[in-house]
Amino acid sequence: MLSYRHGFHAGNHGDVLKHWVLVLCLEYLKQKDKPFFYIDTHSGSGLYSLTDPYARKTGEATEGIGKLWQAAKWPAAMAAYREVIASFNPHKLVRYPGSPAIAAALSREDDRLRLIEMHSSDLSALQKQFARDRRVKVLEGDGFVDVKGLLPPATRRGVVLMDPSYEIKSDYGKVIKSINECVKRFATGQYLIWYPLINSVAAQRFSEQLQKLPCASWLDVQLAVRCPPQGHGMYGSGLFVVNPPWTLKQQLEETLPELTQLLAQDDGAQWSVQQHSE
Ligand SMILES: C[S@@+](CC[C@H](N)C(=O)[O-])C[C@H]1O[C@@H](n2cnc3c(N)ncnc32)[C@H](O)[C@@H]1O
Image 1: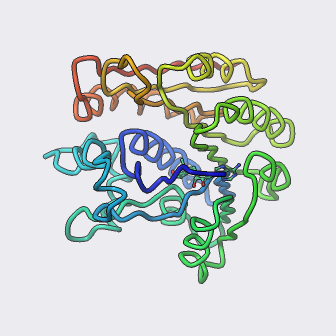
Image 2: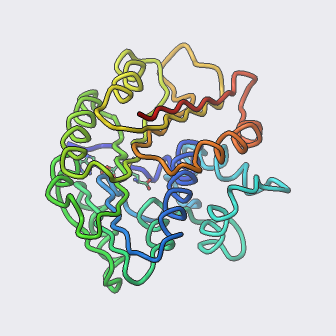
């Protein structure tokens, strides 16, 4: 039984970090005139209203994309991300594109997208949104398992976004197992794994487990927007990137001081970037 609905959280600080880095990775791939393959293992519904009751109930977007939107100046390395968000909001900020919509907006005619989703209402929203886009296939299923059958892509250039909700603790172990299997099939692919920063033992061990994955190079970025609370609230998030573009670390380090300041909720806001390559 899946109860998580991304509509409550769309456009929050976690989405900003995840989608900005996704844009940087896709823009990097586009520097070559060769098609890429994009897989979203946990797609969500693709596009979210920021004025409907879901979004208004939590106000999370106000503390995320809403704060950036009001900033007089965005960090330079966020220009392409800003352009995508603006393309869905020509007048004022009323919609937030999810990862499938962002990837589709940046994809070219020969690029291909495979969007996996398990929840039936998100699935039908995705099917409707992409019904006329011949680059896209929407697939019903379990992203942790079904991603393997799509690898390696014929183009040998690809990005996999694995973005579960972690509403069930077993998601952490499933990510590790699935990525282990994926890198065996497609070692040179880029994999982006989002994770929350929360007070739980499973969450706190997770980044260490990711760093032990059998891959030649990785980058682990974290952005906390406030001090860790006593209870269970999410105080930030991380993105683990397998085979990151060589330009990514510098882009993040140049931008995160400004972005952290823009998104800070108290003086516990901080960022870190770790990188490893063999
Ligand atoms: C965090 S949301 C995805 C957000 C989306 N990637 C974005 O950035 O816009 C997680 C989604 O995964 C779906 N889901 C949960 N378990 C799944 C599974 N095993 N396989 C595929 N989708 C799953 C949920 O229904 C939910 O829509």
